[in-house]
Length: 556
Image (cartoon, rainbow, N blue to C red; front, side, top):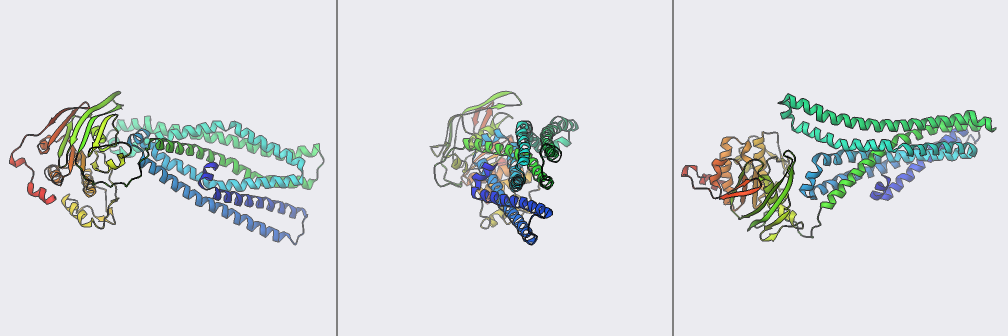
């Protein structure tokens, strides 16, 4: 932790240490002054001035130490969260899937909070360490013989702590690993609450076998770590009392010593016990912080290793000219946990042109979503090439390639704020889209934010469609978008909204099971077990089934 903080701002840490040391030494000097006052060894006229000066020094240096480190700690926590968030945004999507949402959230919350707590405790440690050091110096001045005894006790305590510290450290590490599992169960509880409420046996089994079991395991490891530290601290307390007993009752038998010195030793050592206890009690906090810091650094290294350096170039924001997109011999393989087998998509050979409406169809598990993820660039092909306007998509230009797609996933996320848009210039356009999507009576856009996103799933998907409209990308992908729409709006989506996008020259890929609307497509691509088994051009239908051309022109 200290090395990490010094790397963040060594100058601030030096200031914190100096202020803490001054505060601690001043506190020790204050105790020595009080002892001298009680024993009448100093000029009485100087005592009030010395007492006042030392008190002010203790308070001001204590404040300065805490102020400097609290400021640094707040900055470090903020920078860590921003740094990890940027790495998450820059890392390849498959890498993030492998790490898991729960582990990512635990790093951003639990781990960084533990680091912040430990960093804020550093001034307290510095001050109390300096108090102990100052008291030891004063006690050495009183009697170096007794100081040797006391120093031996402290060395024994530190050595024994280092000897027994592995056990609590191991338990804290296991508790941190289990926290990732517990976070995943909390996500399952909050996101799957409807399914759990509808199935009592599932709910009971989930609680007993997953959430409660994980919570109990986390509690057990945390408790074992805390008890181990508690035993070590009690051992240290026992040594403190042993040292006092030796000084009061054993040492005077062995060697004649002034009772005033004995009294001073007892007073100062009793004062030292509080700083020593604070130091030993702070060790679990620093141990947790070290575990958390290790986890954060591991995550950072893991994400950094997956990020390919991109050439310095202007970043496009989508909407670039589009002439052709082709997939040439593209394959992708992954393991299906539920079926306990490997699934291979491809090789896939496909071409897409501007102004095309393409339906991607097939049974569940045929690979439709995986193909879409490859197409838009979130997955990278294991074999084959993807070409955009004739240029091969690789790790260098993949991020720019991603900016050409507007996608609404089946498990989409709807932000409550319109990020990345000039909302003032788009105000009229947004109002128009809300009217067309039949949401104007439910939602308003105020200061770039939706007035509410607490809507039905179908209405939320329409809001997501509004965001996709505003993005104005050349290629649109809709994954089962109409699945949550009522029949009236589903018909509107297929017969008016999609043809309107096509008429604007947009390429649209629709993953759908609504076969009654397949006639609208320029092509229907059928997948089975990861293979394209048919590419069909739908037959013409009667005029009554054709899109409403007037409505399409209105949308354009």
